[in-house]
Amino acid sequence: MPHESRLTRELRALLHAQRTAALGTTGDDGAAFVSMVPFALEPTSGCLVIHVSGLAAHTRYLKDRSRVSLLVMQSEVAGRPVHALPRVTLEGEARALSSGSREGQVCRAAYLARFPEAEFMTQLGDFRFVAIEVTGARHVAGFGVARDVEREEVMRAMGAVSPD
Image (tube, rainbow, N blue to C red; front, top):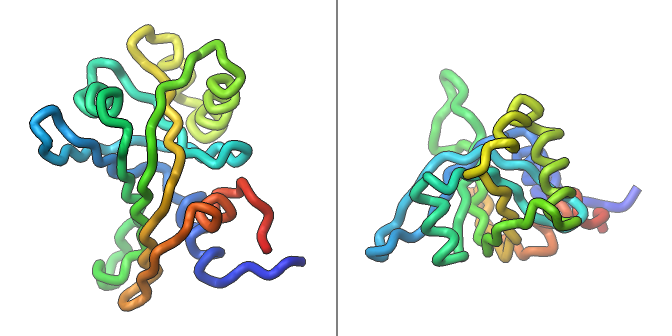
């Protein structure tokens, strides 16, 4: 089996275990705006998929300014220091998907595989799928273990590229 670094395995485990992220967008006034979003991984295109309402502020913001950031973090464990929680900040470009497109269907399937209970929401007219193409990341694997991660390694961790 090809070698994969311990940190890439830990990043893979984090991205596959956690189902929510803090989404950072930029408001109309230039201020940072953060909200919680469930996300899925779409391994063939190497993007994260979110399902957002047109009524939400973050949807309007990412439509006007496609650069976004997502923080995915391990949940707290009682009795363990929060400063050492594994986490990754993903930088990316967001784009709304056409429901009739091939990519839109693939991303919808990936999202519903992770969140089957959200199927009814896909029938609501104001909701859209958004693909976030990751351009880079900052991974903190624990206290004192922080590194920048290139897009290619993030894609491997998401399952889009075979391990080296």
